Amino acid sequence: MLTPDGTRRLAEWIEECITPEQLRRLIPENHPVRWWHPRLGEPGSAETLVNVLAQGGHLTLLAALILIGRSHARAAPPPEAETELAEALVSLDAEIVNAGARNHAAKPDDIFLCYAHEDVGPVGIICSVLRTHGLSVFRDNQSIPPGSGIAASIVSSVNQARAAVVVVSAASNASGWVRRESEQVMARRSAASMEVYTVVIEDVPIPEPIRDLFAIDLRELADTHDVNLVEARLMPMIQTIRLKTSKCR
Image 1 (cartoon, helix red, strand yellow):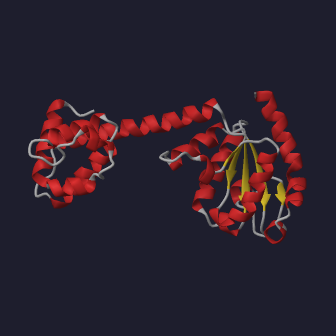
Image 2 (cartoon, one colour):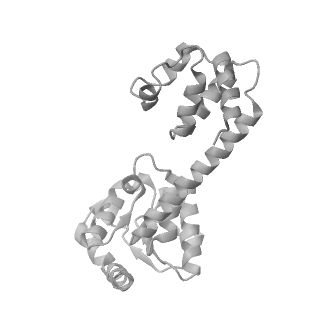
Image 3 (spheres, rainbow, N blue to C red):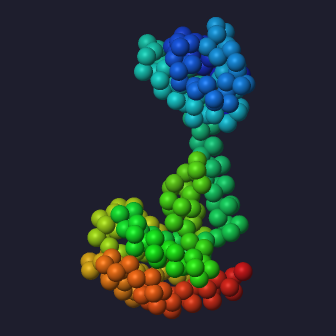
């Protein structure tokens, strides 16, 4: 957190480098800071603004103001204040990551779904079948709460989920993100703390990290979108996961 001296120095710099018009434009009318600080932009009010931002959970907005001020200022902001703000942001990031980990630890996902967003159609069917059979599925575009860090949420789920399903396609083979996720889930499998299953939906090579796993063949799915086919092919995996998760609950 900023010290009183750091707050004062930073406030003086902000008043010199950012005009009242810029402040009012950068901070929306409906922002909670406006409620706490109705004198926004008035002479001598910058110290109150810095205090409100630093202590009210708006460190990222304060950092943005500094970046904007830097682009117009002849002099850099006080280095001590910048250092304190950087340390506060690091602490805030750690709190967000730890909060995500605690949330997932409180109720781990049954399955972490690793896939490429280009395969939204087939993946939607797979996900629906898994959930129909009572399994909780972490799917990034559905499971990450608004405002949460994407990377932190994914890492937390990978570290806590009881099993992972890696969907193999041309798009997933080309995805660096899918490759990193595959490496992470295989690392947990090597530590005997996660089961990993491969589901192939296109006739493409299986990537190196998961090549040794017996794959579930759903290559017809892209053409047929047959839910019954998906259910039949996935059922042995579903039964295995349900049996193991029931023992953990």
